[in-house]
Length: 280
Image (cartoon, rainbow, N blue to C red; front, side):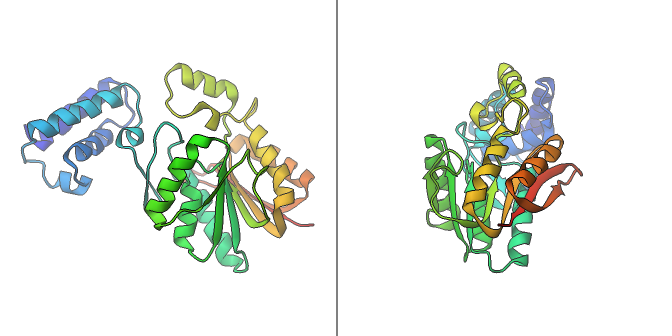
């Protein structure tokens, strides 16, 4: 059997399993089975696939058909050109969150005096680690309330930076010491009922990292309130959120004393990142 043949076979299997992107997923999983890049795979279409690689490929396809995301199957996900380890303890980094990173970098370039940054609800650490990788001179710390996240965060920071970033076990900012020029977060922002429905159909990501309360804004609003005491005057807060939550978050931020509030859209034109500046 050639690479081309088993790719088509995998696409067909995933299509009938109602996977959204059957050809892409088949390509990634065959690349994983053969331990080669997608580019190398596509240049090897007439080549034969060994029995060992084929059997491994079929096992990976079975996992995908059972509902496992490709990133959990491979135990890694690319984010901002870096490679992050992920498993069922953390959310899979998504392209939408790269919009938050881009806005943080824009802010940091425009405000060169910003030096201290904290990332709450860090999970895999993709935001904090990427910002440190892009701007090594920054002092960056991170926190999360789930103890099981710490191991993954240290693994990813050591892997991508060659040293561990400082991590605090904290419910949002409650046990995070010091003050900061910039606070970032991708907090849980799905409605509890939506997450419960997702879990009923086998959604594999951690439930508590998704639930944002009855309307999805509970965690974000708590973070806005806590940031008042943690930001230096003139400091910024950047949060990822759902488009229909932005008006509500703007009201909460204004009540807390934030000014210069703006909303940044994602690549699909949806409001995705909430940005506000603290003035005392």
